[in-house]
Length: 247
Picture: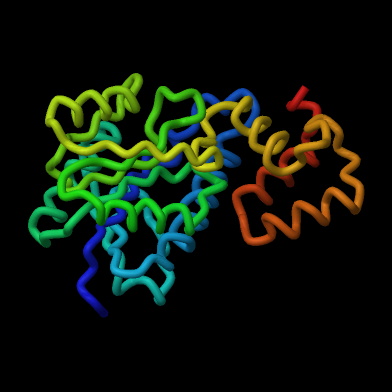
């Protein structure tokens, strides 16, 4: 295998403590299952990137496919499970030791992630020596995708208004900034409103999310577009079985 030049950093919070804002609508078992779907879908996608190594930072037991074990690494957080910044800092030590050219931080909860767009971001980073490529969250407060070249250009700041924090830190460094406004990459899942938005705008764009009759026509559209997206299929199954929670 060629020497990977991009480290793909995936911080994974303990499943039992994840997506607590969905607790009113999804029970603990459902939230854990959702996180597993998130992780499996993301790993399946980013494993197709060339010249990349996947770095998972987590205390969870992740069952990696044999086909990607040679390009992936799991770093255990231990007692340092204090947030995304701490997780990325652990990965940064490995990135520095192995002299990766750049790092790409990808959260697990972007169900509409398009690999071609991630490739475009990585490709674009060849245009500068020091800087970041960044994709904001839907409300422009969080950071959904962050490429740092090199990883030392800024420390991550995944706190309140992380998008602005990352922009500010990079500007203070005098480094290059490229904002990618990929709308689908901005769609993450933290609240029930996020789930409703994704289904309403991207899946059944011309159909009410509260309408659970799902004609063959609309279900066929969904299958054609998102057949291999286990996360959306899982959420759809919950929607169909418990449609009253969406009203």
